[in-house]
Image (spheres, rainbow, N blue to C red):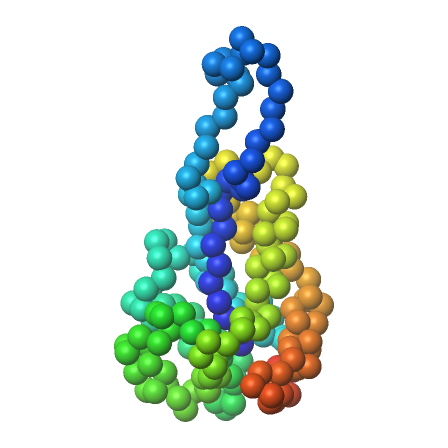
Length: 197
């Protein structure tokens, strides 16, 4: 299982706006545009996937801290891993986000190490996580919406809908492709990438 979190902005802006206006129009409200600092409101989600299926998409209400992350691991990841890999032969990947390395999170993984294995992510490594491509798919789908989401509830709904519509072939291809990538000169084991069976 590959996992990661991503942020989605309600308003997309590159900071540029080009308009033509006559000299006497510059103060008319119809010629002005409000701006939002740093892209405005955002929705943060955490998700996971494997070769077999997309996992749940969890909205993170504020920022992902160790307590919130531990709750996701215990309430979402653990039951799925036990169901999909009842023999304890599954692998779970997380990156080096600070909350992932928190003491309470490490302790939880040590207590449950017989249930599945935690795939170690090398420190200071490139972000080779294939879920990044799925986040791109979701963001691309949201950018194509007409009209665009106008509030956080609509954005959250659009994110979940786009996530659920990712074709199976897309995430299976990413899992298979990951098998050809190498990290620290070593290939990822086939059982980690191709279905963990």
